[in-house]
Image 1 (cartoon, rainbow, N blue to C red):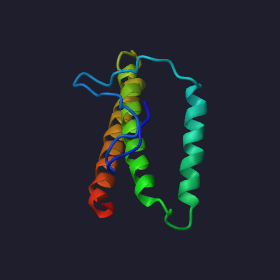
Image 2 (image 1 turned 135 degrees about the vertical axis):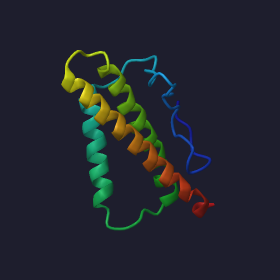
Image 3 (image 1 turned 30 degrees about the horizontal axis):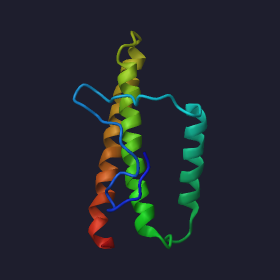
Image 4 (image 1 turned 90 degrees about the vertical axis):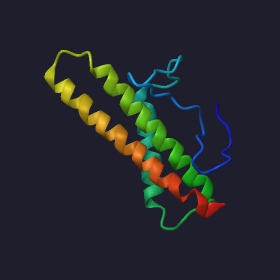
Length: 120
C-alpha cells in the first residue's frame, strides 16, 4: 500500500517485516519478473547519480531513498534466507554476503533518516 510520507524516515510502502528468524515474504507474487524490477532500479539509481545538482524536492527525494534502502535491506535478507537451505557451500557464503549487504543497506537508511530534522 502506497502512502505519502509524513516524515523523512517514514516508509513509503508497507515494509516487509524482518522477524528474528529471517525476512517474511510478502503474501503476493511479483507483478513483473525480478530481473525487470532490478533493471529499472539500476537505471533509476544511475539517473539520480548523474543529476548535477540537488533536486528541488530534496525532502521527498530523501524520504524515498530512506524507504528504498529499507526495502533493499529486506529484499537482500529475504534472498539470503532462501539460500540458507541450499546444500552447496558457495550458497552459504553468498547468503552471508547478502546478509552483510542487507545490514549495510539498513545502516544507510538509518544514516539518511538522521537528517530528517534538517527538513522540518
